[in-house]
Image (cartoon, rainbow, N blue to C red; front, side, top):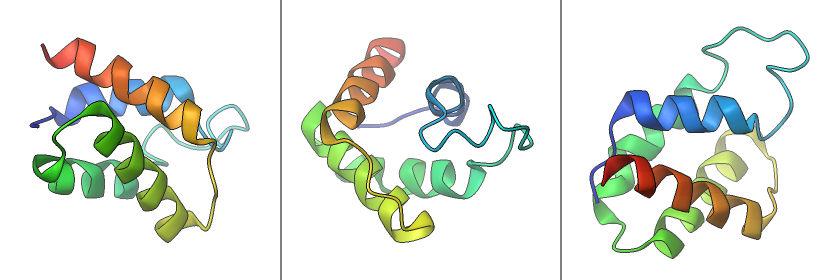
Amino acid sequence: MNIDLLVLTKVINNWDPVGLLEGGAPEDEYSIEIRKIVAQCSLCKSETDLAKLIYTVFNDKMSVKLNHLACLNQAFKITEQVK
């Protein structure tokens, strides 16, 4: 699965999984996590794989345990925009 950086940035920033943008953080606050997801998304075969990747990247980079269903919801939003 290949995901465009701009699409992923839009979805993640709209989601604001940690609430940092809502708190006044800069628009590129999640850029490290987004680049990591884009770099590894080719290994994803399904939305479930993408959701696991999103969860893992945010857990590894920010020590944040996101809701698995929320990650899956975002994975579907991402794939809808790349079709």
